[in-house]
Length: 445
Ligand code: FCB
Picture 1: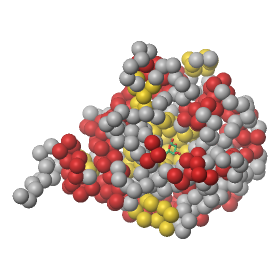
Picture 2: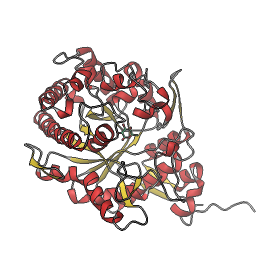
Picture 3: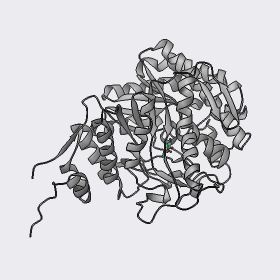
Picture 4: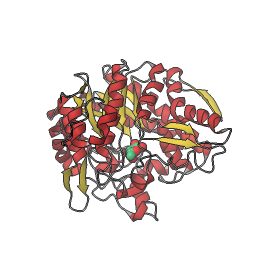
């Protein structure tokens, strides 16, 4: 049987993503460490501990990423390591980050670096972090330090990860480290300050490295009306604009036009070189919302990943890509993945989601790269170790790692720069009739 091949552009970024707090281990100066060690804030009382041991040995996983043929990786820097006390910068921490970034370059892996990925130094949290106007000067100084020390090794930057998720989980749902003030007002104020920090960081980076690409990684979900309920459709459209698009609109002209606040942020207009999309799933909305923005309920046909995390909905990736074309910027899928400890769904998830990207590229949509979340199992915030997102399976007790079957598949895709019917046949044969019609293998009679 002839094989069918979906080929990606030669310069496509085949990557994976991680975040500092989730993989490094022993980030004792972070507000997350405090949160983990007080009360019962983490599912099953889990602790990050050594996490995936990246502070000592990121190289072990980078070796596996290189063997998989990855040519890109998104990682974050832990502000609380770099500036453990206000104005005290730790040169040894910066040196270690230099070593990790250099290790990536040595393996042909291009770094994309996130400055803020959900974690704050304890001292900053004590000063009110994103609810204090002080944060802007602190963030500028932290960024300038990082740009000076590491900028020559960083071609791509994400200033802030998922401002909306951060606001919802921290200020509304209360599952992230408790801020000094909670509620809608505090949440919107925090997002506003995150955007101020973003704008400032954008210009600090570009001043020294005009060629660097700088953007935000934005969680983008397909939000649809739950069946029934006359106002569900109206509400889903409103919520979808606010959750998915309001931030990009703000970046276009530097103006907020949000519920409870209008305003302009200096330097924000045009401060993005790419759109970073973190896509996981779709949610259904009911009006009026009952305590939560969306329902964690799926239709009877839905394929749902571990811990009721979300529905597997690959077409959603195409839909969210399409929804940001109007901003006319290159697009990176800066996160996409699922919790799946036994790898029952991940091989087909990879094939179906990358096929949606291939489809988008074949329409000339500017999708430049894909960073699978995640390279290795890691500490999943308030859900601790209960959710395993890695292409590499990790036993956090022994630090033993093993490439999952999905990791082997991703390796085949990355090394060949393509997705083929042969791969589907080997890793997810059930997909053949739908994805590669005409490629149905002849069965022995
Ligand atoms: C995203 C976060 C990332 C990880 C994945 C599963 O929202 O950016 O750190 O938790 O979800």
